[in-house]
Amino acid sequence: MGEISESMAGRAAILQLLPFSISEASKVNLLHGGFPEVLALPKSRELWFSSYLQTYLERDVRAITNVRDLVTFRRFLSLLASRHGQVLNKTDLAAPLGVSVPTIGEWLQILESTGEVIVVPPYFENFGKRLIKSPKIYWGDSGLACHLLGIRSAAEPRQQPTAFGR
Image 1 (cartoon, rainbow, N blue to C red):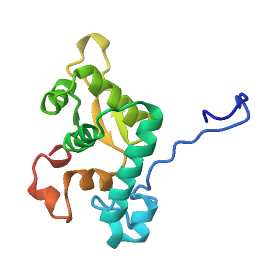
Image 2: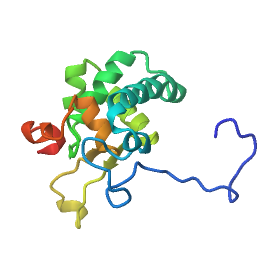
Image 3: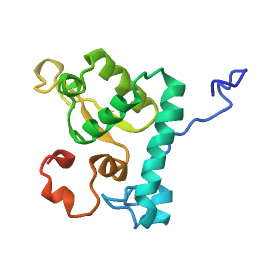
């Protein structure tokens, strides 16, 4: 989009395509997620997710911003995967990584703008009486979150009470 010289306002539609959901494809599950490549070749899941992460970090993240320390950013991805479905606390993410809270905010914006995570604002009926003011964080694909957490079998999330907000 950055290389297009003229305005496409009114002449282009931009669609954000998420991985398949369980209602769209019967092969979708927690471990494999919904990326078509993984669903087509489930035995090569580890290789595909590793390659996806490497190209995502080296091309997409660097194209958006200048993340100096990709190793720490990669650790941030795994740490954030462990918080899937939980209330977002940037301070709890910044401390173990040794980065500032504003850096965590920038990194979350990168993930949200590239469609990797979904930040869900808190629901409340009365603005003045809301109990939780922080949003929740969700990964767009459960297979990628499992890969980041090192989950290799469908039984493992049940054994790890902290995985996926349990």
